[in-house]
Length: 342
Image (cartoon, rainbow, N blue to C red; front, side, top):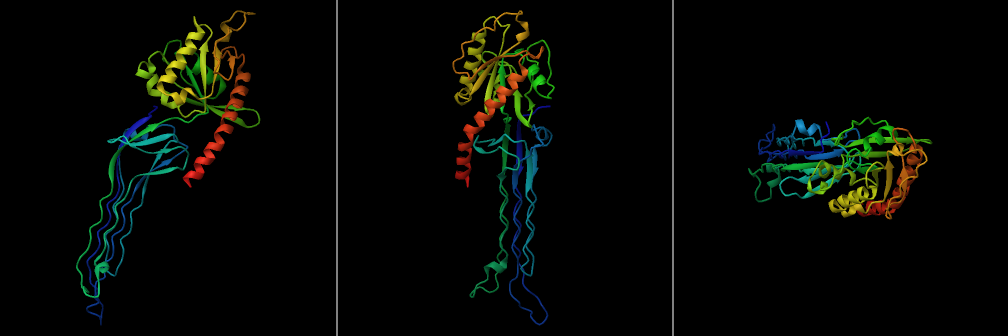
């Protein structure tokens, strides 16, 4: 089951209370205040886990709580702080405050951590309040309450190439022949009900990640069909591949329609580099020329047949080079962002 949204209640641990105690030793009956401080409560963090692909775990458990810190003790012993709680999420997860909608952060890579609830500070024991004029204080502080909030987790899959097309354009079939992924394939619309990822392998240990999302129809940006829910999963792709079937009555109209829906959903997504793949090439009669397509913004136009296997190697090599160029262009920006963060 593919789950890309979840609302979770996270509660950090309360700090331990300080102790009010006085030293009582043999030969020293009035040793003065020796109450220790309380320990800090545990905080709650999100941490990227490369082994996860969905937010399914949070469908069955939607409340997470860290333990409180231990109370202080006599002999100025500080209570133990509670361990932090780390919630594993797949890379590409955005976390927002469920009540205010404020974005708290993004987990982009495995190992990235975001603190979503801060543990309470431990209270001070009475030993902290001793002064030259107040030598026997009985004051102590309770621990601070841990932060508690509801957070919304939204997963946006990270892939190199995102396949965009109408229902039955051949996206799932192409994914299945280019990679080891086995998406559901059938001859009716909206066969794909959830995004699928596949790793495309080439010679020389080269590879790239391909993402297939449910078909886009007119009005997808307004919630029609399944497009609106899953368009978020191509936002993080480096490049897009628009699939236009050659058996469509007007390939140009199909391409322009897809471009329109993407642009209305997100201008930044529409500005990503893209290529056009003319699918179902095997339906053309032998010797017939491949129809032309008006796509001046596309980096290239290739024809492919997933069923007959025509043009597959050419498409794999082309997409790999296309992705490599996009990564090279993004590298200076990513390096600059890392320097700013440090």
